[in-house]
Image (cartoon, rainbow, N blue to C red):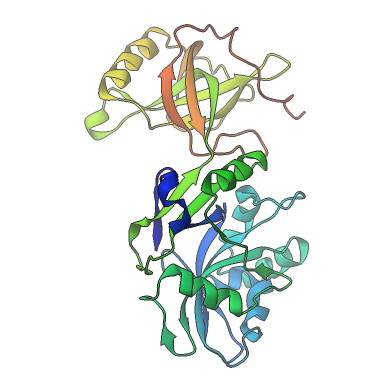
Length: 319
């Protein structure tokens, strides 16, 4: 079951909803047949158990009780926050168990459990969320590499504010009477990302394909670090109207250059470079440790700003 992007439920309906912290990890279904084994499947259906050997001990947690659980595999940073960049080094190791074992010993992952859809030979799909949640919490699944994070009923505005204050990805709102709908992106689950806005300098673009032929498919953007160098922070390919994309294409053609304006030069196949005079505003969810923007989306062209006036938000580039 998948959540639909949205906003907080109306205050008048707040008590009908539960609120969970949105985690930045890999979604998994956990199969516990009751024989001491465990199997993990990704959203694609791929079996990824061997990528996370530290979670195998979960197979003993319920003894002979079979269950199917829903959760998220996380890699936690030094502050206990989920760091998707840390997790990426583990996600591709489902067919490399020896490497996965070494990684698990160096920096184990954590499994956050938030739903149960099958328990002791009983399918729970048609039970309302509040009852499934009670069944999950009664299992007491808290171990060295897994836990059942709390869900707050009501107080959605306070919960969302807390995620922002603690630098967390966002909030998932779940209607208390909602059944579990496998594979459905449901309005009964709403996800709210804590997005950030920032000014960026356009230093290049990638040509669009198909109906976007001749237009930018994405712009390549950067920010000045405290030394004045323009550092690449990512490509932005969404957020434009057709008119805005056409207008931007004209500006990019006028500013074309054969010289990359970024330091260091990013490896972006097919990049077309421009003189870095255009400033845009984008929104994004989080940054990687290297300063790259995750899930950036174009908001507007800042024709009221020059590149010199845009804020320098990046730390010094590593030497």
